[in-house]
Image (cartoon, rainbow, N blue to C red; front, side, top):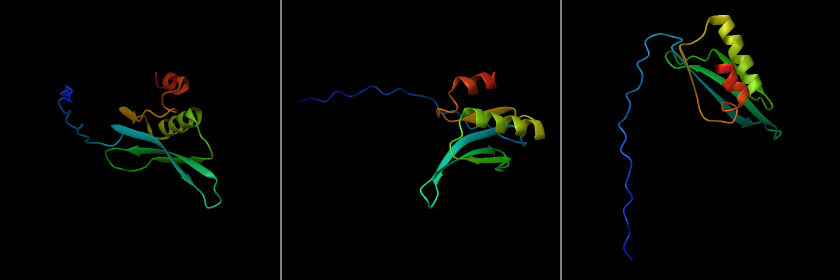
Length: 103
């Protein structure tokens, strides 16, 4: 039986953004772990992409998008807002609450 070759989409690689100063880009993500007792722990991690510092880490049993926006709002009130914000496509970051807060 003859195999058909699939056409692959050719995309040009985008060069990474050159970061020269702090607060140009923050990356946010939820990280999951479990304790020795078996209880799950989720941590909201905010990372400055230029300095690789973590301006905030918030831990909770099951934080959602509202807890994430509260942490971001607090960080922006304390030190100013970044030029851009990056995140993955997790359910916390695709919710209506988070998208409404971003706008």
